[in-house]
Amino acid sequence: MRRILILAVLAVVVIVAATVADYPGSVAIVWQGWELDTSVGVLVAVLAILVLALWLVFSFLGKLVRLPGRFRRNRRERRRRHGEIALTRGMIALAAGDADGALRYASRAEALLARTPLTLLLAAQAAQLAGDEAAAHNRYTELLDDKDGEFLGLRGLLGQALKTGDSKEALRLTRRAIGLRPNAAWVFETLFALEIDAGRWEAARDILDGAARRHLLPEARAAHHRAVILYQLSLAAEAAGERRRALSLAASAAAAAPDLSPAAARHARLLMAEDKRRAARRAVERAWSVGPHPDLARVWAELGGGAPALELVTWFEKLAAHNPEAAESHVAVAEAALAAQLWGEARRHLGLAIAAVTPDGPSRQLCLLRARIEEGEHPESNGAREWMDRALAAPPGPAYVCARCGHESGGWQALCPHCRGFDTLSWRTPVSAPPAAPSLSAAEAHATALLPAIPNRLAAASQSDR
Image (cartoon, rainbow, N blue to C red):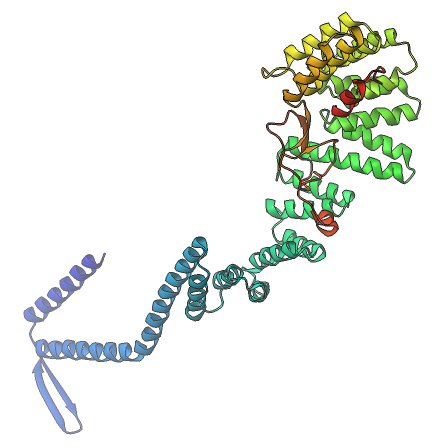
């Protein structure tokens, strides 16, 4: 485009020059006693030179006037480049754990770029790395006054509040943060954990429902979390004397997570308390078909309570029919047969249970159950002792194991008793022996058998191990 414009100007100049040459003439100028006679060509040339001279003069004056502004812009640009370099090097120092370097570059970045959100964030994190929490708190607080940096400041202050155990301040900051970024997953998780830790189950349910609507966590996980919360609300309702509401909440919990056997067991027991034994039976059968568990077998035994031992074998066979391939089904029938002294039937079902477990061989619980069978059928033989000895080296059976810390719990709870993780306990075989639980102070702790055994000397050991 520029070349075309230059060519157009040259063409106009040529045309004008040719026209002047073809039509020569003279020009006379009289002014204040002065008289000038010249040709048209000379006049045009003089005017052209004059215009060019004026353009050069004004162009020079314009550059002279703009020189201070250009100098300031260049200076700002240099400061910005050097500030960005200091900011980058400060981030690298943070990543390397170099507290002194991070503080030095943070100070330089602040001097060159002023107190922008990034420089304040770098200064706050550098101060934290150096152990100066007060300076970090001041920087994070300054970020709250900046529209673009407010969320960054809230996250930093929230981290400090959680670190010091100030749950009230952490809750206030998290609620403010979720108002700014309702779709931030970490904000939801923090607020949810705070409400759970404080035992505010109603508030936790509302938060979970909002997170599920925004798809901040998988649908299956949200349903399981909701079931655990409903279970806790059912406990609270029963404690408050609201038995009908407790039953309704327990039913909702069992429906939301059919694999959560404590919820199904609780639902069945509440139905039994209302003398709805048929509904309780259906509840246990539904849960057993999804996830057989000793808790469900105990409820089933209560439903059949009072029946003779031989009838209880048939009673448990009906339950096992809802999940006939599961090892727990065979264990339940074997326990019932053992109580009825049907040694062959107990041994057969126990063998099927052993065949259904892992290739590592029978678990400690199954070994003890076999020892009980041998003790009952052949009390004078050494079979029971052999199985007891085998139990000492046998792998552990299923237990409630925390998915977060690996801690093995004797019973199911909404919060892991070791790491306080919510909904992390599941019924499975431990991969390895869980680490020993550390000794905690009270403040730290606050923050953070299917049938009655037959009378013999092995029954107590078997029941305690289960």
